[in-house]
Amino acid sequence: VDWRLFAAQVHRNKITNTISLWTAHHFQVDATGTASNTGGREGARWYEITNLTAAPTLVQSGTLFDPAGSNPRYFAFPSVAMSGQGHMALGSSIGGVGTRAEISVAGRYRTDALGTTQAFTLAQTSTTAYNLIAGDGRIRWGDYSQTVVDPTDDMTMWTFQEYCDANNS
Image 1 (tube, rainbow, N blue to C red):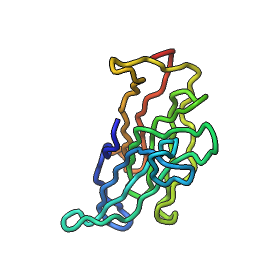
Image 2: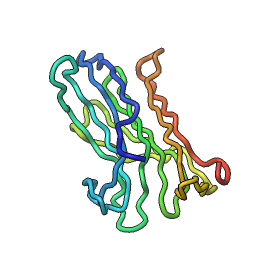
Image 3: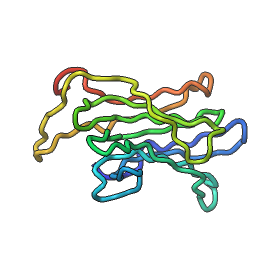
């Protein structure tokens, strides 16, 4: 899967009255979170963009990645949303050598330093393996990911991700 942006959405921060676009994608990074063709791991980068009616402006971005020296976790198919209070939630699939296809969540508070991504939480674990081989010889994991704000309160965040709940499922 390529590095396209996923699940972009526009939301209003009710505290600052700022409207911004939030989106995310995954790409290969090194142990410092810097983009690298030989980095050996996938990181999930998110973006907040404002000034949507003129020249869009990048306000902040951050990368969720595993800095481990060996057998790092891979964060793939991320999606991001901002609540009406300006807090952000990021959901993604997570996997790697010795790690099953699972679900991670991370985020940031409105008051965190720009670009800050708090440590991830493993939201759903798995004890089974996903090793289905596609027609082109690759193991193909789905690219289904969405993080949203509950419209009833504009605070509760929901993320919908995939994980392996039975062998090759």
